[in-house]
Image (cartoon, rainbow, N blue to C red; front, side, top):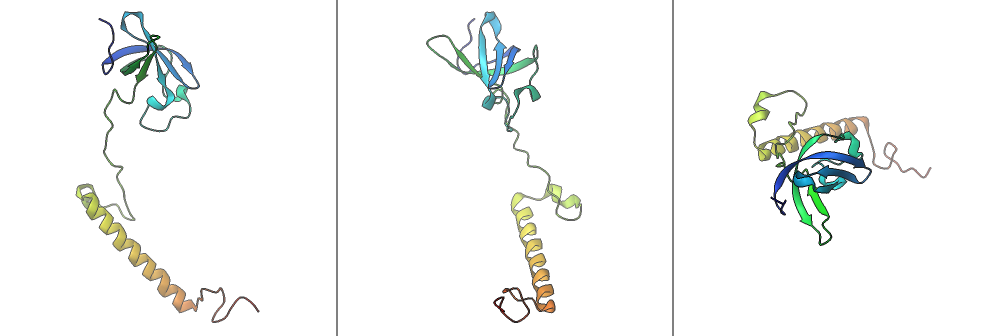
Length: 139
């Protein structure tokens, strides 16, 4: 059965170039995975992500009139939308169960408190935005 657009099939990496990787598909067909279709992350070097003879799952993106097959590894696997755990200051087990909005509110509150602390330190030192205590920088 020939490969069709939208299908996810398993193939073998047969060659690596600076712009992508060639993948051998079932029935002897071959296609290209462009560097932008290798991973959801930024890919600088294809060889950092793929090796020759590696088995990969690919999605068939298009087949040209000339028979060239365009493939995608990143579209063959779902993107995980799991956010990176953020820890501001102390490690807090409660953060793991906080919603994004709660984490954002906590961050804004902490940020405002830090800004207030900095402003109070500056006023105690007699800091002036012009650079000198109570005067201008012209003298």
